[in-house]
Every structure is written in structure tokens, then in C-alpha cells.
Length: 125
Image (cartoon, rainbow, N blue to C red):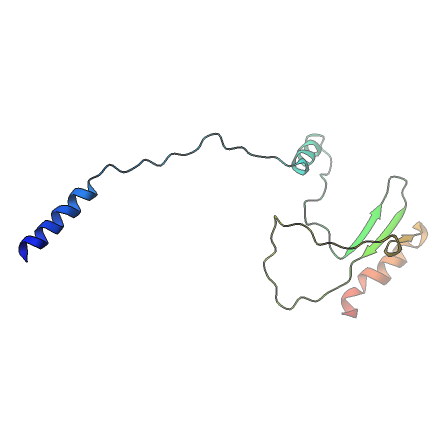
């Protein structure tokens, strides 16, 4: 029994003395910079306010075009009881936006429109 035990220990020691492989670190890993990051860095170089980051948009959208016209779009509120972690690298939700869903706001009544539709929203929930 002693001989078997000693033989087993010697075998284990000999197999453990083998030269271990070195871990190599790949040096030339391709890194893709998205167009969004390029736009943000260009805006920062110009000392202007950068565009909003991905995932910025919420339920209420106030859109201002180049002519100064105001448009409003509100997504349907769906209460989520179980909150799973949001994935940053997934595709955005399909909003099924149609022209009839976008409301044009006259500039004279902007304050009234915002206070009526956005500011009192929490009270209605």
C-alpha cells in the first residue's frame, strides 16, 4: 500500500512540473468607434453642447425643427411592475410612430400646453 501511495505522489509531482503555457495578450484588437461618438467628440471640440447620449429620450418628446416649428409626441405609458435591467447594447423599442400621433404646437400657447400635458402628468397616474 505504501508503494502505491508513494508512486502516486511521484506521478503527481512529475506531471505538475510540466512547463505552463504563458498567457498572451492580443495587442491588435480592432476597436470600432461609432458615428455617435465621433459626433460628440466633434461637438466638444467646437465648444458647443453635444447631442444627447443614446437612450436619452423619455415618454414626452418636444421636437423643434430648423424653421422653429414645435411638435410634440407622447409615448403610451405602460407601467412596468418587474424592472429588469436595461441592456445598453440592444435595439431601441419600436414606437410605431405615425404622422397622426405628432401634434403641432403654436408658439403662443407653448407654456399652456406644457403645463397641461407634461407638468400635471404625475398627478394623473
